[in-house]
Amino acid sequence: METELNTLVHRANELASLPEVVMRAVDMINDPEASAADIGNVIADDPALTARLLKIVNSPFYGFPSRIDTVSRAITVIGTLELLDLILATSVIKAFSGIPPELVNMDEFWEHSLYTGVVSRVLATRHRAPSSERFFIAGLLHDIGSLVIYRHRPEQAAMILEQARGSVVPLHILERETFGFDHGQVGAALMQTWHLPEHLIASACWHHQPLEVDEHRLEVAMVHLADVIASAVHSTASETERVPPMDARAWDLVGLPAESVDAIISEADKQFADARAAILPSASAA
Image (cartoon, rainbow, N blue to C red; front, top):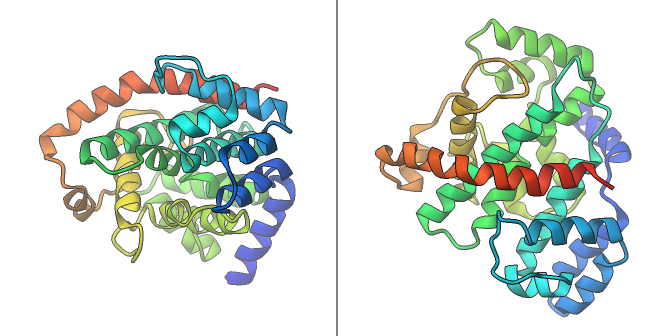
């Protein structure tokens, strides 16, 4: 199983590796001696990435009162780690293309992922968790392992999706029965090769089993709940028409009243349109 997983991730990394400028930025952001200006200069080497980032931070999704016209200013305003998250989001979306359209509708896939990210952000804000943007990116990227499976195991993926449509067995369980691992483990392994933050890796790996993780439990629980909510109220790319089972203990961990769900969905609906306009079109442009 481990050999098969490693082979799959290695092939994915060859075709969907992050751009060199992104990897340099990740390294610099993790370097305590690197300044905002240093990081901004590295990102400025990629004009298309710079343009995408500035479009996002100047969008209604963030709602800053004055225009931000440099990457270093964006770092100052939204924070270094938050900017890293945005770099990862736009770069990962661009890295995956060529998924067979008869297998998965990519617009629906990213819209589901984005809605999950928005719900994660709303949950984090209501929980008053620090740095709500990290929850947003964790939600956005939680299913990227599915894209690896779709791209490199399309026939088996099609079979599993067909099984899921007529079964009460969750998709990730069917994946384990077929491959010996699921899309969460694939996504986590790919993120590890990219040296991404541990909370993103944990959220991808454990979003269907949120209480089995030892660290980053709050992030994983948020993404788990957001995925369930998004699947219940928003279209899903797999078209299984099944909402993944919710672990009630995750809701207890987040600590929000059950009656707040309608308000959470309402707030997410308001933010989703701004997030989609800022992130999804910009990711496919340039």
